Image (cartoon, rainbow over all chains, first blue to last red; front, side, top):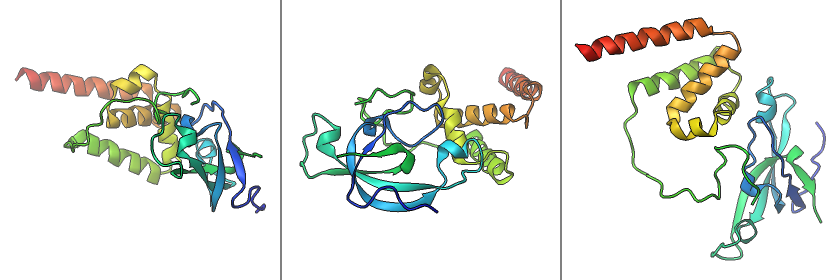
Length: 95
Length: 108
């Protein structure tokens, strides 16, 4: 299996797309930049599960986002994070 | 925030108060749950993602109108019809039979 495209701590942007089939990337997270908190491993991802057997498995990452970045009127601590698991093909490197 | 493209994708939207109360599960709801698990076990559906996909394809007005297990039932019906596991005629006949039975029970 290929090596992970992204490294721990790397800044990545979650793609903003309208995909017809079921996926697991909520609109609120799309387009936002976060950091790779964990490389979770390989999993069947729903966009291909629906059309077949989920193979080949796809690498999943846990992406950490700042709550103050997600929600313009966020009133909690600027250190608060939201971690969300995103498949590799939804991520792109960000500066 | 990006505009959600489907009715289920409500994270971050103003949704009003949430009722955290428990509610009784009707017998037919257990039956739908059992049918989905059986369909998975028999390989008629590939994964829960396929059921979720069917739910997300509901028209927004249907998505809002239907309760949790009604959405599952609709998704399961569409999926099994699409794969030819159940025919439209067989499903329509069964629905007619149930309606007739309920109507007879109601008039007793």
